[in-house]
Length: 394
Ligand code: PLP
Image 1 (tube, protein in one colour):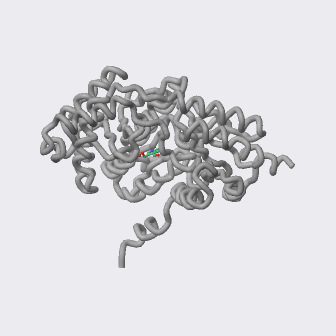
Image 2 (tube, protein in one colour):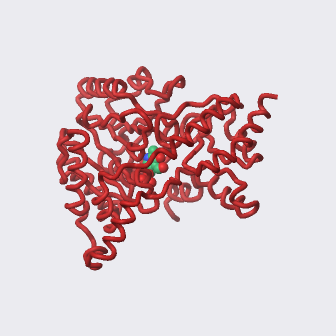
Image 3 (tube, helix red, strand yellow):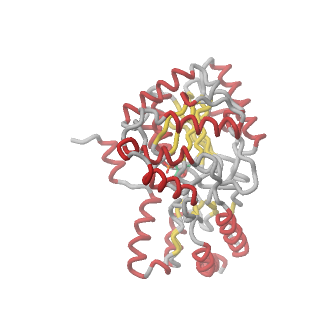
């Protein structure tokens, strides 16, 4: 008999993946150009030229045995130094390479960090709506997941609810800004208030409460500065990924950074190394480590996402939908015009629009529209959104 929880997880893929798979079948039936697939956060912007150049340079001019060999378990020291310098220069945080652990993207960063921090039965707070895999990762690490809904008016943190949810068992809170699925960026004021609340709670309970900053979208902010959480709160662990910032989601590369003032930080980092080892996440792909090491300062090209956001947001508002204007990432959160977002998504499918219902994000009644598609797809999808809206306005 296999492990029952893993069996259940394996048998039921995520709703996002199910819709994505449906989209593939539908495209084969009626042609890719006739399906408006807004399901997955797979960037449509190609990786920057600097990434291609670095890849070619590494492959053509480096000793292949060294290039493809194992690095040390937490990653190549030179790469970790380059990342630490980048953090130092951009955020004024004294980052040491010895506190950086290279991983296979944010998913690995999160699962390793949660396993490193959480003892069985401790609580991990997530702010709804949240990336559905948080629950999978946290529960596998032995945590009880505590869901705290954001304010529906602007999807910022509801501090009264958060304060009430934090107990002596709270080990960590996961924060994701810019956010998937809302696109909301937490302001410096909000982050400061969050830090104050967590400091107060740590004092009241004499515990450590860790802030896990899930940062795959850090670079994808249109106008706002995204506050760097280690500058505000000592017990911060950053889970970074190059999946979206450098359009490399399939290459699986990112890192964990245990901030300098984390309490017992050396032990936290050692536990990260231990969790990486126990989970089999040692030595992230070496070629990709070297490539990102050379590209730490390469800016993300977000203008195409901004154009898509503006086009779609304006059109959907004109159609009469209620939409949260995204500050960043490449998702748009739209209220379902009927209470059951699943039923709305089924209706959208009839117009060949593939949207994701928000139930698995812990905040029912909305849909997520992933607009990291081509501008042409957005333009051609607008009449379909208009007809969909008309069905509800009738
Ligand atoms: N966290 C959030 C909020 C995400 O949206 C994603 C991916 O879409 C991840 C983590 C996982 O990212 P990665 O592909 O780097 O593992």
